[in-house]
Length: 121
Image (cartoon, rainbow, N blue to C red):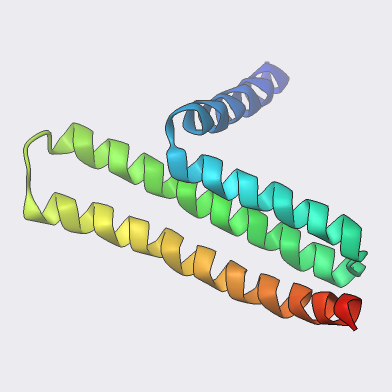
């Protein structure tokens, strides 16, 4: 019985990711960038540590976007009418995604710019 509950938990989580990918434009954008970084990582033969950093940042950004989506949906359910505090909650959760994405971009540039410069030389 416990195994069925665990399996169902994974199924529900995967369904949530799939549903978000179908409906959330920004999540699609994050996935596209993730794929581009993976391709660049393969081309530039990044180190194991660099892969671990990139994979951790993928998880951080995708998780932040999923949390943001869940918060926005919950706020919309709780406050169907326009409310300044509801807007603030949604803006703050979107801001959290922006911070994680910006951090990831900076770290990505730190990893890949030296490799690009070495390739050009």
